[in-house]
Image 1 (cartoon, rainbow, N blue to C red):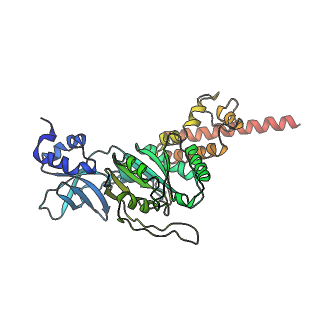
Image 2: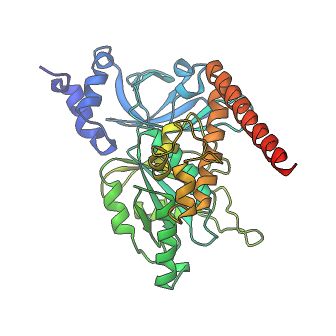
Image 3: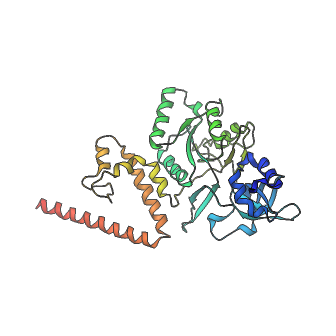
Length: 370
């Protein structure tokens, strides 16, 4: 007999199904059910406490027992947790189940720590406003983190009603598609309802997180998907076109058409955090081209037989893509090197090798001028 056969777990299964509870979560929770703890999903975290939706409704619980020194293991919106049964005052979160996916960025501090933004996410929706000039490099940065999280990325171009010319809109979508290989790109207008049915169908099958800068229209989009004004909305500043922080916490909300949505505050800084494979997926065409380079450790700068540079010369690869790729690879290496002594040594060795090649090339050039 499986763990899902007990009355309490069966009740939790049916009551929490709308929030993503399934047989695998029930099996993982079985040891805690045997201790009399309740399963629930964290829908909001703030000031050492969190709101957890359980089969009996939303409860407030203290996180004192699940506050480790590792910032990546703290309770996060989207976590599945084991909480005390009714009667505790206060109730406590006793543990969190292992995460299936986690969206992590680097903190703004110099300690190179990671900050988890959302847990157990199936779809990472990168919201980009068409009210401002497209910043493709920023889109690539968001997508690198999204791929690294284990979720399926989706780029949503919001405020499409501000681009009334269909030809211009099609070109903007195409530009983003070029910067997001393998990622669906959808233009939507929450004001006019365009594209919302497609987006709702995508997110109805799991947990989606809304990501983007302030002013990207995330809260407006969330309200449109929810069918009611749950999230507050503020206008973009006229002075510089930047958005105000409307959402200040990460909130998990059940959608009427199925699935759940995590709305996040606007992100000004989006630092990579050990996102090497994510960067590789965003720039899949460059990594594929690199397999044809003469040297396996080609830096795609001036090496002979570089297939990547040949693609740029032939017009197959935009120079902007290579520059963005180099920037994100270097940034990710720096972050990883802060905690990996072996990688730090390899990077120093590589810098010395390139320096020697550069000096040799200068010497050869000077010799040829004599």
